[in-house]
Amino acid sequence: MNILVIGGAGFIGSHVCKAIAARGDLPIVFDNLSRGNAHAVQWGPLFKGDVRDAAALDLVFGDYTPVAVMHFAANTEVEEGEQAPLAFWDNNVGGVIALLQAMRRAGCDRLVFSSTCATYGMIEQFPLTEDRLQLPVNVYGRTKLAVEHMLADVSRTEGLRYAALRYFNAAGASPDGEIGEEHKPETHLIPNALKAAAGLGGTMKVFGGDYDTPDGTCIRDYIHVMDLAAAHLAALDRLGRYKGGVACNVGTGQGHSVRDVLEAVEAVTGRPVPYELHDRRPGDPPRLVADVTLSRDLLGFQPVSSDLETIVRTAWNFHQARWQATVVSD
Ligand code: UFG
Picture (cartoon, rainbow, N blue to C red):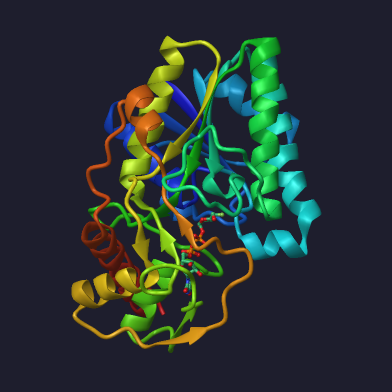
């Protein structure tokens, strides 16, 4: 079975490709490589193109006749979206419009879409169920919510089958160290903490120590990227069985504070994490933890690698290998 993976050279997309191949299907990666890495495309062909390019999409649909599409090719850095909203709307929403039109032309009616818990906004409900009112507080969340609405409309009128997966905090790396998290620039907690522990990133900043949480730092629901990949395959299988669409949290239901993460990094690496407390980062909700009832009941999804130790250990293995490779190739 051919699966078209738009944005398959990125962190989550590449791990999903690995999982697709592991069960005997072929991931066709379509990526403009603006953020992704060509070396992370190892399990099928790479087609370099932009999701807003209708002709390029038609070519790849024509060549590979995929039965389904997964879409990861979005701008995701919250702060960047605040500074350049039009680029976010163009890529994150315009890109999906172009993709849905190409799917219609090709007669492909199945889509797994990367949505986010950022569509909920500032949340007072724990854990968070999918039926909660979504009031995103940043451009990134608003573009993802707009696509969720668009998918529901297109599903109603054109029979699109879709799953919008609302990710919580994707983290960790492939257990064999082949691929992992490599954002440019890196803003995420775990890679930054690992860098600081390795003595490569200087002193790391902890954004906010005065939140209304037990230790004063923000709480997040970290999900291992291979678990997240498994959720995509479960969603894909569901699309084959049911018509219509669904929006579903993908998390673990467990929250960990920034300090918990730093402790886990120190335990795994055996090194201290030099850090200093800074002001809160704008737009950071104090606590984001998924209600996982729907993903369990609807997708049969159960995370198996998302304990903090496994997440940090796999990320540490990956980063060490990358840093070594960089030194050798220098
Ligand atoms: N943090 C630090 N120092 C850092 C990096 C992060 O203290 O160097 C803190 C953040 O302030 C936050 C927590 O660590 O409290 C987690 O931050 P991340 O940047 O790792 O992740 P976010 O929760 O901000 O972002 C994730 C996804 C986004 C998505 C967002 C939804 O990566 O794509 O959840 O709120 F938009």
